[in-house]
Image (cartoon, rainbow, N blue to C red):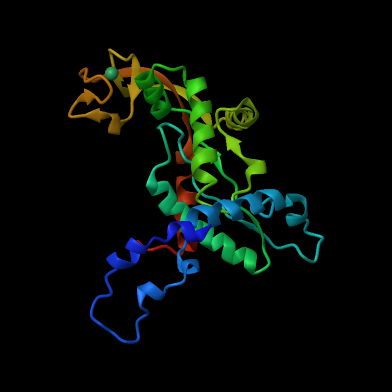
Length: 252
Ligand SMILES: [Zn+2]
C-alpha cells in the first residue's frame, strides 16, 4: 500500500543540502519511512470510534465514594457553525487543550472532553441570509460538516456521546431556566437603554458590527435608538468580583 506512494522521481528531487556522508541516501530509503497520514489517521480514528476510547463514564468519574475518583473536565470553547467550515484558529486552540487532556488521561484521570456547537446569534443569521437558506436547515447542515469532515478528522479526544447544540430545545430549556431563577431572585430587570440600530435590517447591532457608522451587513447608516431590554444586575456583585481578584494568579 505504502509502496504506491513512493516513486522513483521523488528521490531524485530530494535536496540533501550540504553533502554529509552520515546522511542517508534517499535512494535507499525504505518506503515504510513515508508518513502516510491519510491511511494512518483513518485507521486509528476508526479504532477509536469502535472502542469508544474517548467516551467518558461520567457516573464513575464523579463518584466521590470511589477510590478512583479522579475526574478532569477539559472544556474548550465550542465553535459557531456559521460558515462553510471550521476556522484554522479553532484547531489551533483545540490542539493545545487536547494535548493537555491526553496528558491528564495518561496520568490516570477520567478526562471528559466535550464538544458542541454554539449556533444562535447574528453570525448564523448573516450566513443564512447570505446563502438564502433557513437558519434551521443551514445550521444542521453546517454542524454535520463541522463534526464529520473536520472535528472528527483532527483526531482530538472529543466525547461525542455528550455533544451539545445550543439551538436544541434540550439545551436552551436550561438557559431559560437560569433566566427564570435570576428573574425570581430580582436579578433580571427590564429597562430602556440606547442601542445601535439598523433601520434597514431592523435589528440591533453590536459595536463591532457598526463599521464607520454603517451597518456591516447592508451599509445603511446605523442610528442610536432607545429600546426596552433585559438586564442582569451584575453590578450587585461588583465588589465581590473585585475582591476575588486577590485569589487569581493571572498576569496583568
Ligand atoms: Zn443593515
